[in-house]
Amino acid sequence: RATDRKMQATIEKYPRKNDVYIQYGTAGFRTKAELLDHVVFRMGVLAALRSRAKGSMAIGVMITASHNPEPDNGVKLVDPHGEMLEVAWEAIASRLANASDSEFQEELAKVAIQTGVDVNKPALVFIGRDTRSSSERLGEAAIAGVKFYQGTAVDHGQVTTPMLHYYVYAHNMNLTPDPQLEDSYFSKLASSFISLSKEITTKKNYSPFVDFDGANGVGALAIEKLLPRLGNTLLLTVHNTDTVTPSTLNKECGADYVKTHVAAPKGFEPTPNKRIVSVDGDADRVIYSYVDSQKQFHLMDGDHIASLVAGYLMEMVKDSGLELSLGLVQTAYANGNSTKYITETMKIPVAFTSTGVKHLHHKALEYDIGVYFEANGHGTVVFSNNARNLVLQAMNDEKLDESKRRVIMRLKQVMEVINSTVGDAISDMLLVETVLKARGWSMEDWEAAYQDLPSRLMKVHVKDRNVIETVDADRKCSKPDGLQKEIDRVVSSYSFGRSFVRPSGTEDVVRVYAEAETQVEADKLAVEVARVVY
Ligand code: 16G
Ligand code: ZN
Image (cartoon, rainbow, N blue to C red; front, side, top):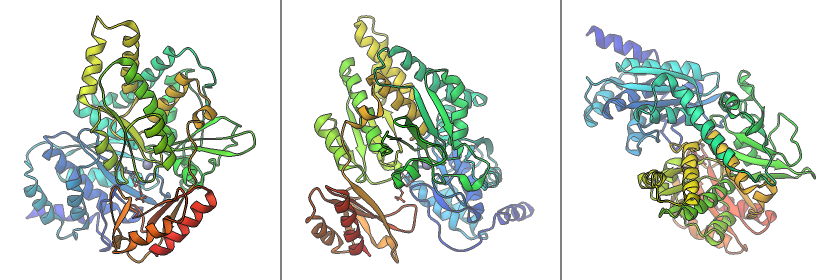
């Protein structure tokens, strides 16, 4: 039929150029940008299909490869409440991405039947992209995919990943009319931050001056939109804002660089003892750092942020008198001393999950207030309906005493400043700034909470990384046989030694993490374990 031929011609405008299998992994599909046109087109189609499966709610398609080099790109789907794509649909995404051009329509029809989609329902898809040179082209491929499936595509242009997550959520919850999504995102962050700031009178060692490292990516664009709304509550100097020269993205700057190289970002001269806030290429991760007057570099990663935030929330819960459970979620890569500090000193329960935001997020939902952060700086806080209801009720309780009411109002503002849909570097920064200010802390004060155990993260290239399988939240290898025994044997000869091995979800490597009493020992342990793996 003529329409079928026309549809096939559209599919072939985004041809699958080779038959290398591509998988929807922890961060969606991610590879070299030139290999992604057909994948992104098909994800546009799938997003439209998913919108129909979800009663025509908006679904998000984000084009980004985050902290990866500029020639890479990626695509991930955002579900109706702003969360990551439901796990069961990851396999469907992989099936559609890997179908040959001639099989695609048939495969699509199968998916529609399998998921019971009513093809006559309207479909709505929000598209967002980072600043990569390939992202505009890929964004158009996504739009073409949505239209191919008779859906409506709304192009949100260059946005951070967490902005798109929030847009999807805010639209589906009817929080705000679509043309005002951007405005409502920034004004929610700014107004809650300003009210929190106003309430804090003692500032002690806190200083509002901060150097912001935008990784030459979309985070730099977003911060420029936020800044005018902050007035003089936070005095940011913005660096690494070149979103036009492709080679600069994430190059020697940004959250991933700072965390993995344990070094200050390039692109500006750090002022002694001044806070540096680094975000990654799509601004869903944040890392704090500073250089002291002896030119010594100090890293404050996701674990430090988690403990800072959890401690503050715990205090508010106690002071409010509300009965709310609070817990923190970490991965095996959290520094051992952070876990020790959080459980033993702060007495906050810590749960462990496998690496990947979806696992942490899911676990965090088991608490009324669930704080989760990966050491790499990705994290947020989620609140149960129970928590939201209790806070709202208490706010309207006329018999509540004044001091408790003030705490509860503050808790409400903290909920507003947080983007609970996913890790959000900018929102997380405002939260950290709020806590530092409330505590009257400098970076040194914050750092005094606990000291990191020396650690080392290594990559090992192996023939097939998937022969390694892990259990117990990535802390033990169940396959291949005998590997864990070998690791245990090596680790047992180190004091405070810990080491984990797992296949990467984003690169063709095996990751080895080691921790020990001294840096020399941590390095040695990592090398020894890497040898066992290789
Ligand atoms: C992805 C994950 C991140 C995880 C990282 C690990 C999301 C949104 N992102 O970037 O949470 O830390 O993968 O990568 O889930 P790896 O498996 O290569 O170490
Ligand atoms: Zn990212």
